[in-house]
Length: 550
Picture 1 (cartoon, rainbow, N blue to C red):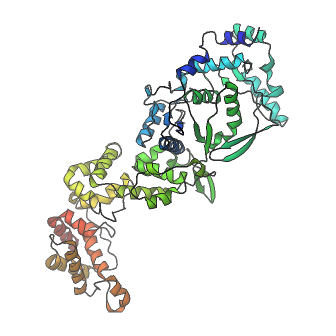
Picture 2 (cartoon, helix red, strand yellow; picture 1 turned 180 degrees about the vertical axis):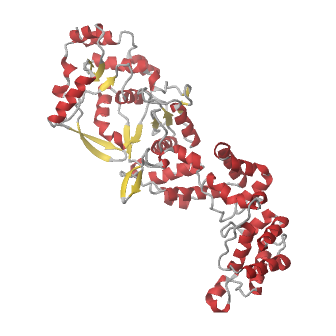
Picture 3 (tube, rainbow, N blue to C red; picture 1 turned 180 degrees about the horizontal axis):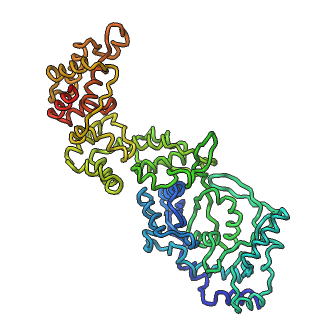
């Protein structure tokens, strides 16, 4: 008996690999086009590190005229969660990372290189496993879990490497006829790769991000097909990336140590290996030390955190590009209004150590992006978010759409637009005081600043109403009247006048305008007061000022 006999007993009915090589031809793409994939397991919530990988993979593919596809690696079905695939698909969609090919929901897919769910590719893996058995490069292993655990304990006691290799690979040398007899007798088994590697020898590898790296050759006889007939990650990814035409595998650097094994699998299967780019994890600073962003400890590790907070997907995507390439920030300064798709991402410019997660930076990016939205865009995006996350905001905005648009239009479309909104969960606080029903609902607590004498405040406000307020004034006229009001009460018309001769004045025009601002809004810091008054209208302005006097 030979290896083909063994292969036929294990896989009597699978197709020859030539069938799959013909079914999945080399992609017809222009020279230099990159094919990348995002290949998560549906075993938990989507991590920001996963989105980071997807952003980079999609960007690299798109900027070269290539293909970005989504493959679901669901061979570990014990750990799979309900709606896990849908969560991945929807998360990518939310952040504008929908793939060119791959899964589009739990069951459906687009593209010619599927199935894009590994559990549906069982026969394909079996065909290539059979091919390895026929070459004498894979064999059945009948070791039980207890045997393997006993072996591991002996290796640790002897201070040897753990694993299934060399003298420890017990089933490697079982005669073919004996292996066939065991299989026919119904003994449970798995399939292992028969490694020809020598750990005393080194392989030289060039990682697109990490640069040149040396590894010892792999000598582990790893499992390639489990007892349920499904493949392990190592074997499946090699078969899939070959048949799907992946040119660049972009993944977390926890997989860097697997490179010798993966290159070995590609070589023995007769495949051209893709280029590997191992991304350093996103880090967090804690007690002066860096650590990986943790699913357990850090709410911002989950992409759902950003959706629930209402941080626009563009801001998250741009922030991830910002930490991917250090030159992005300079590019953005030089191209403030250019779509981030125009930025040329370079894998070899990525950090080999982990980038620190910076929420302040992310929110600054978000403020800038929201500041460029029109009032209608803010309204539509905020309503879409509020539909799911904030019923109060939804009701507030929809109470009077025309008025809401005026409110959202304050200091928008200017050369220096307002940048006080970083996320949709901030929006209600930032606009609620502009709605009379809400403003007068409860008694206002006016926290006055430099001018806090009640009698003086009352006189300033009364004088403003009787002498200076006119809702039809243009902005220049309005501001000149504020200066007149300041002068009337002994305050400098200009801030610089006050700074030059502070002993001559009680304060400056800014102090007077702050009194009016607080009376109108209940707040010391707001967008442009003139624009606020135009939106509120004469009746509301007068009512608010009179209420403050009371």
